[in-house]
Image (cartoon, rainbow, N blue to C red; front, side, top):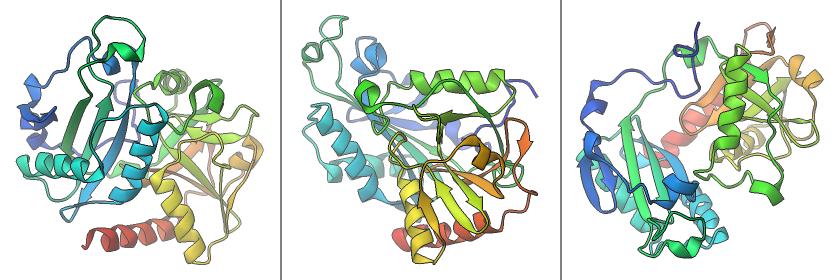
Length: 307
Protein backbone atom coordinates (compact mmCIF):
# COMPACT_ATOMS: atom_id res chain seq x y z
CA UNK A 1 0.00 0.00 0.00
CA UNK A 2 1.52 3.28 -1.13
CA UNK A 3 1.35 6.68 0.56
CA UNK A 4 -1.53 7.80 -1.66
CA UNK A 5 -3.86 4.95 -0.68
CA UNK A 6 -2.80 4.34 2.91
CA UNK A 7 -5.64 4.66 5.42
CA UNK A 8 -5.86 7.68 7.68
CA UNK A 9 -7.89 8.39 10.79
CA UNK A 10 -10.05 10.75 8.72
CA UNK A 11 -11.05 8.45 5.88
CA UNK A 12 -14.71 9.01 5.02
CA UNK A 13 -17.15 7.28 2.71
CA UNK A 14 -17.37 8.90 -0.71
CA UNK A 15 -20.27 11.33 -1.02
CA UNK A 16 -20.95 13.08 -4.33
CA UNK A 17 -22.77 15.91 -2.54
CA UNK A 18 -19.41 17.19 -1.33
CA UNK A 19 -18.52 18.28 -4.86
CA UNK A 20 -21.15 21.04 -4.80
CA UNK A 21 -20.73 22.40 -1.29
CA UNK A 22 -21.27 25.96 -0.19
CA UNK A 23 -18.47 27.23 2.04
CA UNK A 24 -18.94 30.00 4.62
CA UNK A 25 -16.32 32.73 4.10
CA UNK A 26 -16.64 35.92 6.14
CA UNK A 27 -20.42 36.17 6.01
CA UNK A 28 -20.94 34.77 2.52
CA UNK A 29 -21.82 31.26 1.33
CA UNK A 30 -19.59 30.58 -1.64
CA UNK A 31 -19.40 27.60 -4.05
CA UNK A 32 -16.58 25.26 -3.10
CA UNK A 33 -14.49 26.00 -6.20
CA UNK A 34 -14.74 29.75 -5.55
CA UNK A 35 -14.06 29.80 -1.79
CA UNK A 36 -10.85 31.74 -1.24
CA UNK A 37 -8.99 33.88 1.28
CA UNK A 38 -6.26 36.43 0.65
CA UNK A 39 -2.64 35.39 0.26
CA UNK A 40 -2.05 38.13 2.84
CA UNK A 41 -4.20 36.32 5.38
CA UNK A 42 -2.33 35.68 8.62
CA UNK A 43 -3.55 32.08 8.65
CA UNK A 44 -2.05 31.36 5.24
CA UNK A 45 1.06 33.42 5.81
CA UNK A 46 1.93 32.44 9.38
CA UNK A 47 -0.48 29.78 10.62
CA UNK A 48 -1.84 32.47 12.96
CA UNK A 49 -5.31 31.16 13.77
CA UNK A 50 -7.36 28.57 15.65
CA UNK A 51 -9.86 25.99 14.47
CA UNK A 52 -12.38 23.47 15.73
CA UNK A 53 -13.75 20.30 14.18
CA UNK A 54 -17.41 19.66 15.04
CA UNK A 55 -19.86 16.94 14.07
CA UNK A 56 -23.53 17.33 13.30
CA UNK A 57 -25.95 14.68 14.55
CA UNK A 58 -29.73 14.89 14.57
CA UNK A 59 -29.57 18.52 13.50
CA UNK A 60 -27.35 19.56 16.42
CA UNK A 61 -23.62 20.10 16.87
CA UNK A 62 -22.34 17.53 19.36
CA UNK A 63 -20.70 18.91 22.51
CA UNK A 64 -20.94 22.43 21.13
CA UNK A 65 -20.23 24.16 24.46
CA UNK A 66 -17.04 22.13 25.00
CA UNK A 67 -15.75 23.06 21.56
CA UNK A 68 -16.55 26.73 22.07
CA UNK A 69 -14.84 26.74 25.47
CA UNK A 70 -11.69 25.44 23.82
CA UNK A 71 -11.90 27.79 20.83
CA UNK A 72 -12.56 30.98 22.77
CA UNK A 73 -10.04 30.03 25.45
CA UNK A 74 -7.39 29.71 22.75
CA UNK A 75 -8.42 32.96 21.06
CA UNK A 76 -8.15 34.81 24.36
CA UNK A 77 -4.74 33.28 25.05
CA UNK A 78 -3.38 34.66 21.76
CA UNK A 79 -5.13 38.04 22.11
CA UNK A 80 -7.44 37.49 19.15
CA UNK A 81 -10.73 39.27 19.82
CA UNK A 82 -13.11 38.47 16.96
CA UNK A 83 -16.03 40.53 18.29
CA UNK A 84 -18.25 37.46 18.37
CA UNK A 85 -19.31 34.86 20.89
CA UNK A 86 -20.27 31.19 20.88
CA UNK A 87 -23.85 31.84 19.78
CA UNK A 88 -22.56 33.75 16.76
CA UNK A 89 -20.48 30.70 15.90
CA UNK A 90 -23.54 28.49 16.27
CA UNK A 91 -25.41 30.67 13.79
CA UNK A 92 -22.55 30.39 11.31
CA UNK A 93 -22.45 26.62 11.69
CA UNK A 94 -26.23 26.24 11.41
CA UNK A 95 -26.41 28.53 8.41
CA UNK A 96 -23.67 26.56 6.64
CA UNK A 97 -25.28 23.21 7.41
CA UNK A 98 -28.73 24.37 6.28
CA UNK A 99 -27.34 25.79 3.04
CA UNK A 100 -25.92 22.35 2.27
CA UNK A 101 -28.97 20.35 3.35
CA UNK A 102 -27.11 18.77 6.28
CA UNK A 103 -28.83 17.35 9.35
CA UNK A 104 -26.77 14.27 10.27
CA UNK A 105 -23.32 12.73 9.72
CA UNK A 106 -21.72 16.03 8.76
CA UNK A 107 -18.35 17.37 9.86
CA UNK A 108 -17.37 21.03 9.99
CA UNK A 109 -13.95 22.60 10.19
CA UNK A 110 -14.48 26.06 11.69
CA UNK A 111 -11.43 28.27 11.20
CA UNK A 112 -10.63 31.66 12.69
CA UNK A 113 -7.51 33.62 11.78
CA UNK A 114 -6.20 37.07 12.68
CA UNK A 115 -7.19 38.17 9.18
CA UNK A 116 -5.41 39.85 6.26
CA UNK A 117 -2.14 41.64 6.92
CA UNK A 118 -1.22 45.10 5.64
CA UNK A 119 2.30 43.85 4.80
CA UNK A 120 3.75 40.33 4.47
CA UNK A 121 5.46 40.28 7.85
CA UNK A 122 4.98 38.63 11.22
CA UNK A 123 3.82 41.30 13.64
CA UNK A 124 0.19 40.75 14.74
CA UNK A 125 -0.47 44.51 14.58
CA UNK A 126 -0.25 44.25 10.78
CA UNK A 127 -3.59 42.42 10.81
CA UNK A 128 -5.79 45.51 10.82
CA UNK A 129 -9.05 44.64 9.06
CA UNK A 130 -10.53 42.06 11.41
CA UNK A 131 -10.57 38.27 11.54
CA UNK A 132 -11.14 35.76 8.78
CA UNK A 133 -13.80 33.17 9.59
CA UNK A 134 -14.35 30.12 7.40
CA UNK A 135 -16.61 27.10 7.91
CA UNK A 136 -16.20 24.03 5.69
CA UNK A 137 -18.98 21.52 6.34
CA UNK A 138 -18.94 18.19 4.52
CA UNK A 139 -21.26 15.20 4.38
CA UNK A 140 -18.96 12.89 6.30
CA UNK A 141 -19.34 9.37 7.63
CA UNK A 142 -16.20 7.51 8.81
CA UNK A 143 -15.20 4.68 6.48
CA UNK A 144 -16.04 1.18 7.70
CA UNK A 145 -12.41 0.01 7.67
CA UNK A 146 -11.58 2.45 10.47
CA UNK A 147 -13.78 0.42 12.83
CA UNK A 148 -12.64 -3.01 11.66
CA UNK A 149 -9.10 -3.13 10.28
CA UNK A 150 -7.65 -0.48 12.58
CA UNK A 151 -4.77 1.95 12.21
CA UNK A 152 -1.05 1.13 12.06
CA UNK A 153 1.14 3.44 14.15
CA UNK A 154 4.87 4.07 14.08
CA UNK A 155 6.75 5.78 16.90
CA UNK A 156 8.50 8.85 15.51
CA UNK A 157 11.30 11.15 16.71
CA UNK A 158 9.11 14.28 16.48
CA UNK A 159 7.65 15.04 19.94
CA UNK A 160 4.66 16.95 21.37
CA UNK A 161 5.51 19.36 23.02
CA UNK A 162 6.61 21.82 25.71
CA UNK A 163 4.10 24.57 26.59
CA UNK A 164 6.82 27.21 26.43
CA UNK A 165 7.59 26.44 22.78
CA UNK A 166 4.12 25.94 21.31
CA UNK A 167 1.55 24.70 23.77
CA UNK A 168 -0.13 21.56 22.35
CA UNK A 169 -3.40 22.80 23.87
CA UNK A 170 -3.60 25.29 21.00
CA UNK A 171 -5.65 23.80 18.15
CA UNK A 172 -3.83 26.21 15.89
CA UNK A 173 -3.34 26.49 12.16
CA UNK A 174 0.37 25.97 12.89
CA UNK A 175 0.39 22.17 12.46
CA UNK A 176 3.87 21.68 10.99
CA UNK A 177 5.03 19.77 14.05
CA UNK A 178 2.29 17.20 13.47
CA UNK A 179 2.75 17.17 9.70
CA UNK A 180 6.43 16.28 10.16
CA UNK A 181 5.44 13.47 12.53
CA UNK A 182 2.89 12.16 10.03
CA UNK A 183 5.51 12.14 7.27
CA UNK A 184 7.93 10.27 9.51
CA UNK A 185 5.28 7.62 10.20
CA UNK A 186 4.37 7.30 6.54
CA UNK A 187 8.03 6.89 5.61
CA UNK A 188 8.22 4.11 8.22
CA UNK A 189 5.33 2.30 6.51
CA UNK A 190 2.60 3.24 8.99
CA UNK A 191 -0.65 5.19 8.74
CA UNK A 192 -0.14 7.64 11.58
CA UNK A 193 2.53 8.71 14.04
CA UNK A 194 2.73 7.78 17.70
CA UNK A 195 4.36 10.78 19.34
CA UNK A 196 6.14 10.74 22.68
CA UNK A 197 6.31 13.58 25.17
CA UNK A 198 9.55 15.46 25.94
CA UNK A 199 10.39 12.84 28.61
CA UNK A 200 9.90 9.85 26.32
CA UNK A 201 6.51 8.73 27.61
CA UNK A 202 3.67 7.76 25.28
CA UNK A 203 1.70 10.90 24.48
CA UNK A 204 -0.55 11.22 21.43
CA UNK A 205 -0.64 10.70 17.69
CA UNK A 206 -0.16 13.42 15.13
CA UNK A 207 -3.95 13.83 14.77
CA UNK A 208 -5.67 12.09 17.69
CA UNK A 209 -5.40 11.25 21.36
CA UNK A 210 -4.65 7.64 22.28
CA UNK A 211 -5.87 5.16 24.90
CA UNK A 212 -4.65 1.69 25.85
CA UNK A 213 -6.46 -1.17 27.56
CA UNK A 214 -4.47 -3.40 29.90
CA UNK A 215 -6.08 -6.09 32.06
CA UNK A 216 -9.43 -4.35 32.19
CA UNK A 217 -7.95 -0.89 32.85
CA UNK A 218 -7.93 2.05 30.45
CA UNK A 219 -4.76 4.13 30.29
CA UNK A 220 -4.00 7.41 28.57
CA UNK A 221 -1.29 10.04 28.93
CA UNK A 222 -1.22 12.56 31.75
CA UNK A 223 -2.61 15.18 29.37
CA UNK A 224 0.29 17.53 30.11
CA UNK A 225 1.63 17.48 26.56
CA UNK A 226 -1.33 16.56 24.36
CA UNK A 227 -4.32 18.33 22.84
CA UNK A 228 -7.10 18.81 25.39
CA UNK A 229 -9.39 16.72 23.24
CA UNK A 230 -13.14 16.96 23.69
CA UNK A 231 -13.61 13.28 22.80
CA UNK A 232 -10.66 12.34 25.03
CA UNK A 233 -12.34 13.94 28.04
CA UNK A 234 -15.71 12.37 27.21
CA UNK A 235 -14.11 8.91 27.18
CA UNK A 236 -12.45 9.52 30.54
CA UNK A 237 -15.75 10.75 32.01
CA UNK A 238 -17.68 7.81 30.56
CA UNK A 239 -15.21 5.30 32.00
CA UNK A 240 -15.51 6.84 35.45
CA UNK A 241 -19.31 6.91 35.29
CA UNK A 242 -19.52 3.29 34.09
CA UNK A 243 -17.10 1.85 36.65
CA UNK A 244 -14.23 1.27 34.22
CA UNK A 245 -10.84 1.92 35.87
CA UNK A 246 -9.21 4.76 33.92
CA UNK A 247 -5.82 6.35 34.55
CA UNK A 248 -4.08 9.44 33.22
CA UNK A 249 -0.45 8.50 33.79
CA UNK A 250 3.05 8.28 32.38
CA UNK A 251 3.85 5.00 30.64
CA UNK A 252 6.42 3.80 28.15
CA UNK A 253 6.39 2.00 24.83
CA UNK A 254 6.97 -1.23 26.78
CA UNK A 255 3.50 -0.82 28.28
CA UNK A 256 1.99 0.17 24.93
CA UNK A 257 3.34 -2.85 23.06
CA UNK A 258 1.88 -5.17 25.69
CA UNK A 259 -1.61 -3.65 25.67
CA UNK A 260 -4.69 -5.81 25.08
CA UNK A 261 -6.34 -3.06 23.02
CA UNK A 262 -5.61 0.46 21.86
CA UNK A 263 -7.80 3.10 20.28
CA UNK A 264 -7.61 6.69 19.12
CA UNK A 265 -10.10 9.41 20.01
CA UNK A 266 -11.15 12.39 17.94
CA UNK A 267 -14.25 14.27 16.91
CA UNK A 268 -14.33 12.71 13.44
CA UNK A 269 -13.74 9.04 14.18
CA UNK A 270 -14.89 8.95 17.83
CA UNK A 271 -12.99 5.77 18.77
CA UNK A 272 -10.72 4.26 16.11
CA UNK A 273 -8.96 0.96 16.93
CA UNK A 274 -5.20 0.59 16.63
CA UNK A 275 -4.09 -2.61 14.92
CA UNK A 276 -0.34 -2.38 15.48
CA UNK A 277 2.45 -0.18 16.77
CA UNK A 278 5.92 -0.35 15.23
CA UNK A 279 4.93 -3.56 13.46
CA UNK A 280 3.80 -5.26 16.67
CA UNK A 281 0.15 -6.41 16.75
CA UNK A 282 -1.89 -5.02 19.63
CA UNK A 283 -3.56 -7.83 21.55
CA UNK A 284 -5.39 -10.61 19.73
CA UNK A 285 -7.60 -8.41 17.58
CA UNK A 286 -10.52 -8.77 19.99
CA UNK A 287 -11.67 -5.36 21.28
CA UNK A 288 -14.39 -5.78 23.92
CA UNK A 289 -13.43 -2.68 25.92
CA UNK A 290 -13.21 -0.50 22.82
CA UNK A 291 -16.67 -1.70 21.77
CA UNK A 292 -18.05 -1.04 25.26
CA UNK A 293 -16.69 2.51 25.27
CA UNK A 294 -17.87 3.06 21.71
CA UNK A 295 -21.41 2.12 22.72
CA UNK A 296 -21.28 4.42 25.76
CA UNK A 297 -20.04 7.28 23.60
CA UNK A 298 -22.69 6.71 20.95
CA UNK A 299 -25.37 6.89 23.64
CA UNK A 300 -23.81 10.09 25.02
CA UNK A 301 -23.90 11.72 21.58
CA UNK A 302 -27.52 10.66 21.21
CA UNK A 303 -28.41 12.26 24.56
CA UNK A 304 -26.44 15.43 23.80
CA UNK A 305 -28.02 15.96 20.38
CA UNK A 306 -31.54 14.80 21.22
CA UNK A 307 -31.47 11.80 18.87
